[in-house]
Amino acid sequence: MTDQTDHRAENQVELSRRRLLGTVGAAGAAGLALGAAGGAGVYGAVTDSGTVSSDAKALTTVGATQAMFHGKHQAGITTPLQSRGHLAAFDLAPGAGRREAAALLRRWSATAKALMAGKPSTDDTGIALDAGPSSLTVTFGFGRTFFDRTGLAARRPVQLDPLPAFSADALDPKRSEGDLWVQIGADDALVAFHALRALQKDAGAAAAVRWQMNGFNRSAGATAEPMTARNLMGQVDGTGNPKPTDADFDRRIFVPAGAPGGQDWMAGGSYAVVRRIRMLLDDWEALPLDEQEKVIGRRKSDGAPLTGGTETSELDLDRTGPDGRPVIPDNAHSRISAPEQNGGAAMLRRPFSFHDGIGPDGTPDAGLLFVCWQADPLRGFVPVQRKLDRGDALSAFIRHEASGLFAVPGGPAEGEYVGQRLLEA
Image (cartoon, rainbow, N blue to C red; front, side):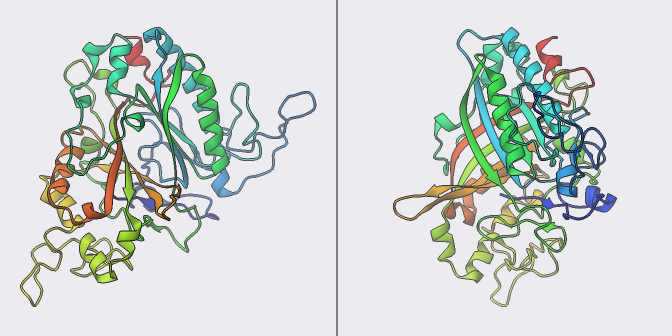
């Protein structure tokens, strides 16, 4: 359960190479552009004739930041974490198959491309007329059942085999899985909702929403300098994420070209594990600070390991205290989830926090919309989660309530729609 660094300061016009490539969850050189390029200006007000005027005013840095729709990878995987997000799964309508799915992905891709450039969509609702792209990303994926519905079961990757059951699971099947998955992120709440509404309308009679979840993170510019975000437990959350500058980053996160088993359509893509994780905040907040830190294995104040140093210091897992016990307890979350404790297994975690109200007993329905990316979930999420399931001290304070696994193909080339290499092969 980790987050990523918020890489944008509100009044900074350009992202430095250090912030793009050197911090947790950075976008790398691909997938992000700034300023007015590619339609990043406000797309104006609607005139009396129903057209859109072009006399837009200049945007702030936050509003002008634009992610690219076309590229080797889909946006929303290595894009810097946004402050607002929506996750949604759709099921194809009865009788809809490969033809209808292809038409839907064409519509969705056209809408996503326009909105990510700060332009209006077809039959635009006007919700975001005053804003620019605001780092909007729209990411599409396919669930296991999609391949049966479209007659493509022979091309379903083995990586989409169902995740194993875990003892801490309390999964609601109505809020899990789905034929199609959409992830939306933006630095403006109206821009994010506008995209969600546009895609829902585009679905038409071809698909219906199975489930939908809303999330948030710290807003760009809310801190004096870019820093790792905190989750709803108050913990600095995201320090251990792999970075695009790591030599093995692409191997761990993205499917290579020439993948075996006829899966070339997944080249440049990744697999997303999605989990709605409820945090039992009343129980957590009743713990004294030092006990909270032992559960995580890091200081709450700055995220540094209990063995000392700064947030980015290596965990000294062999260090013992005066009592002879490990300074970082054997069941600490950071110890159990560390790649060196899991045969090098790693995943890029890019979640959103959520809060869906307060129950009659005063308990908040809040926690983490956990999204992690990897080239193979059987080598990323599954081995780590199995180990956490056996003895993570944090397990007493969380509950996994929904789950999904989706194949997210590579980014479309110019003139392509997402998934075209699968649906038109």
